[in-house]
Image (cartoon, rainbow, N blue to C red):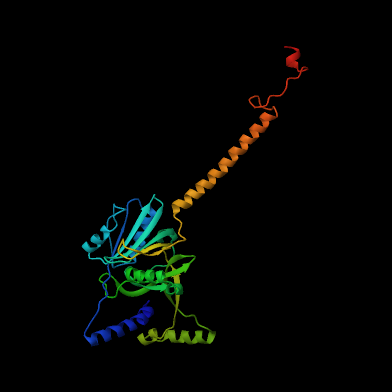
Length: 317
């Protein structure tokens, strides 16, 4: 963690020195208002808590009752001195939509959240320091299309913890990865794990044992080579962009996903497909009954079998 923090802090220190030389010190002030609507499930609530734990510059508020007048969230953000809004909207107790907005002027992105897996559910062995700053990793495709560039800037300003934030820790020990595939954004969280590099041959191993007997110094600890690996810790989810609006929860449409199909339509198609199977089965039953009636195998059919004079019921009537 220390090596990653030192490597990334060099560029930040150089920029700070240039700004102080010019006499102007700019501070990145980002605060995020995190809230949800009524009707969220336990899985949605745990996802909100997991994301809020990774954002020390965020503020969790009570559930918002309104689902139509979302423009009032700008006033709520102004009340709490927040310039970013993350609103989780639950519908029908099973669908979750994420609104990400820059208050008060916009833009606003709406996502459908699917394939939700929380940290408690995954139970990975990794862990990260609470309040530490993350590294945001984006796929190359985020620089190819305009709407993905807008989404990238929103994620940078909302999920990126600003330096010198009051509740943040001066460590970088986890990575937020965003990759695009099939029109969806896959979000993964990894821990930056540092381990000492293994000895290559026996000669080096013997030298290492001799060095281990000698008293250690701080310079020898710094010269150690560390292998950096990534270990997933969760949560994970899939975001499907729906629309991008120019303003904050309103305004002109900058982007609309033409390939988006709402979960209600998918469920209706599945019910209609199941109903068509039942209708076909009922129609087959009716056809079978009509054929049996035409053959005289049913007494209530349209065709009656002619009476035979040699029938026992006619002879002994």
